[in-house]
Length: 112
Length: 113
Image (cartoon, rainbow over the protein chains, first blue to last red):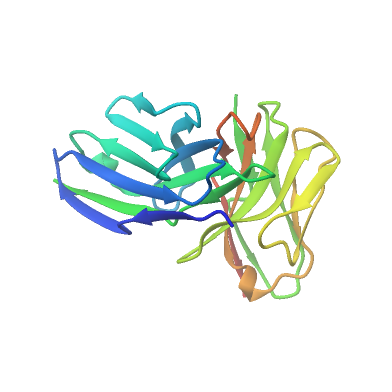
């Protein structure tokens, strides 16, 4: 059974700090991993998609890495801002039916 | 390009009532799916479709029906609503699950009283 774990469940940092969110997965046959952002009461916004043949993807202040051998992905946020406050979800696509499996998310609060 | 559109955004139902949650995408995506999001449980797959006329069950399918008559639309039906179906429902689509990411709708917040 595919499982995705995100630690910590919540993280509070001061503005300007660089931070790393962690995601681990059990699926050795992962096809890709996607990071999402969810604001309170809103839908999911895709941030970055890393295909299994890639090691990392970058978009602005965000950098996501993928290590299939260790079953880990990280989302690095540089120079955090209060507007980055949200829940960050990782999800991997894998298995025989390419099922998308989510972690439970990390609630990030960036304090001014 | 509207992406994935869900209607309604909010709905209150009485126990036993039926309703259909609508989902439409204009990206010509073959794969569409429905998730429910509950506190402490994360997002769980209800049903999915790999193309028009083809649907299959996900992790929590009981109490829900789906059909896929066109590529664009993937409605979710609650035949007899129960309080346990109080949740936020998300529809998602993908061009190809294997090599492409998913696009999510903005969600439907459903309360069953």
